[in-house]
Structure formats: structure tokens, C-alpha cells
Image 1 (tube, rainbow, N blue to C red):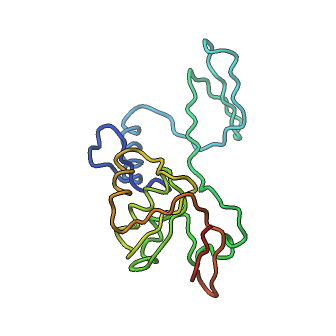
Image 2: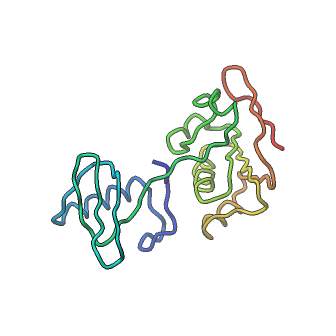
Length: 179
């Protein structure tokens, strides 16, 4: 659920919504003769590149395969600050797509400068009055087309070489301190 809009994918000139891409892939996969199972991988035994790998699961199954592709998903990078949990759902969010309506016509801040932060900033800029992209570096580290969109968006102001230090508010986020 974290990839809102994927722009750097061959065959999708205007990009594609992450959710739509997942549905399209699932639909295509299911047109082939395949076995689909939801299990937890507990161990992968791989002797060398010439022999099949043995994938052991929590249900006691062993699958043999030539290759294993790890698609672990994406967990948001935490700031590890006390305010993070106390304001979660009250002004702090990890999911721009799902929470955009809460930030409509407001000033918001997105922390980070990689692809995920930039996708979130680009998406949110369609809802908010002003967006601060706070990044601990002096440049955006995103794919070229996304980087250009961020740097040329009049609603987005990049705050370089900075970190979110603290968050203040009573019932919700009211102020932030950036260092």
C-alpha cells in the first residue's frame, strides 16, 4: 500500500497507480497455470547456483525452484522520536494516499527526499495549500521525472540539510520544529 504512483515502469508512459498495477499483475498471473499459496517462508536452502533451491514454509511444505525473488514490501522508515507515536493518526501519517483528505487546504510537511517521500509530496500537492519537503541532504534522490516534478512544483518548498526535531500540539499537530 505504500507505492501510490509508479512512474519509472516500462510500458506505462504516464505512470500507473500502485494498486492498479498490483491488480493487473495478479490478473495476468492467474491466466496461467500456477499455484498460489499464502505461507510464511521459514528457510531457503541453496547449495549452489546449479541445483534447485528448497523453500521451506510454516505449513511444512517444501517448494523446489531455480530462483527465489524476494519482494518483501516496504515498511515506512521511522524517525524514532517520541512525538511520532503520540501524534500518529493526529497529524502524523505514513500513508499519503489514504490520508490526503485530512490535509486538504492545509500546509503539510513530508520528511525525506527519496522516491517514496517524493511520490507522497507529489500526490499531496494536489490537495494541500503548501508543502514543505524536509530532507537531510541538499538534493532530491528520486527518479528523474519525479525529481523534476518536485523541484518545479510551486506548492512544494524544499527545506535542505534539515531534520524534523519536534512536534507540538494539544489534540493534533499544530507546530513542528525543524533543525
